[in-house]
Image 1 (cartoon, one colour):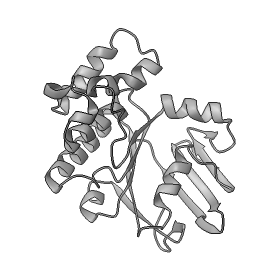
Image 2 (spheres, rainbow, N blue to C red):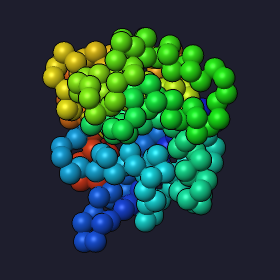
Image 3 (tube, rainbow, N blue to C red):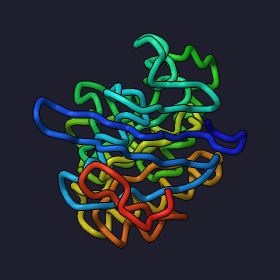
Amino acid sequence: MNSSRELLGASGLRLSFGLTTALDGASIVVQPGEIVALMGPSGAGKSTLLHCLAGILRPDDGEVWFDGERLDTMSDRARSAHRLRRFGFVFQFGDLVPELTLRENVLLPLRLLRAGSDALDRAAELLDTLEIDRVADRLAAEVAGGEAQRAAVARALAHQPAVIFADEPTGALDSVSGEVVLSTLIRLARQHGSSVILVTHDNRVAAHADREVVMRDGRLAAGVAA
């Protein structure tokens, strides 16, 4: 059972893909506004845990809760609504819609939520803050990787989500661009009071977090407070 201070958490998660065990009793708790770095070697289950916490995957066993509600027992429609309204996502390669401009990509969650007349102003503010306003009307397929990833950060923040899930958000960038993208993501998340779950294998990236947790073999490593 989660306390009133816990925003997001999981207990005893187990999930297998065929004969491969991805999660083997993983448990974690995230507080409101907390930045948590989820570390571990490749194949440890980091991304699988993130996807369960976000309601993208449903575990075979265990519990996932968000804001006092069980997420894992919700219908697909209800979990999709949570992802749209309360969660933001930044993936390694941005996953922008290539046929849309950067501005249109940032506007996507706002338009899906029927955000109203201030949506354009909100998108413009984020594009300016992330210093990509000069390329805002170029197609996502035509801009540099660092610019596309900044647009992905803007899209994730556009609707001021409670939680941002960032899976290796700088993994495809050079060190300079990666540092800019990550520091901006963390700064804006803190300004908005958003929690961040940050999957990484890079200690320099993890150093931006309030807390680091390490996964091995589908569970939080022994001796690591979750």
